[in-house]
Image (tube, rainbow, N blue to C red; front, side):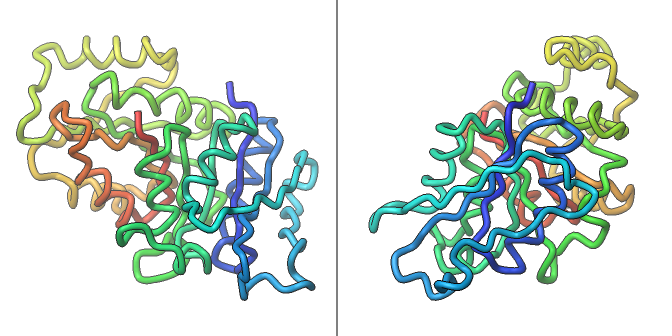
Length: 268
């Protein structure tokens, strides 16, 4: 299903911290890994000696096919837009990147970092990893034993399920389901039937299991559930708990910023 994975880096230790996850996913999914650096004019963090020093693959992923690209950015171009465009042009179906790399910190867009903006706005699924700071991931970055799919059973929320399912199958991970309904959402009368249909339409029936259900004012409860159950990744779309309003993405934004594990997200 997936054709390639893109790993953006600004060559900092923070940005490179996401490479083990990107590499293990490329290995398990048997797809090439595209390492990308967006060139900023006068970037003080890219010297002549480091300009082409992309990070090496971890030993356990040494067989992964790797391509590397230096992508120029125009003076008025936003780095998030450049990365999303590059992913489309290079046929990458998944972006894996760290939050708060050097360029990430320096290039804010309306107060949101580049990585977080991609998670919120990219129609290509993106995994955002946070290994530094107070809200950092504390479990092994490349561990993929338990995944969580959060959904309100809408068609929009289903868009991320095929990717989560592909990762679960390739890694042998368990995929749990969390049904999330905001205060304005209508819960289906036949919950089991709706869930079965939801997974069938995503061709993921083989991964369906008994779900947990949360309803009303639950963004913090989702984070607590992820932490208590020690999930290795949470997958959702930006419309989660939006009541059908695609512009109401407060819940998704909160999860992106506070999840204690990598997040797999996309804008459907």
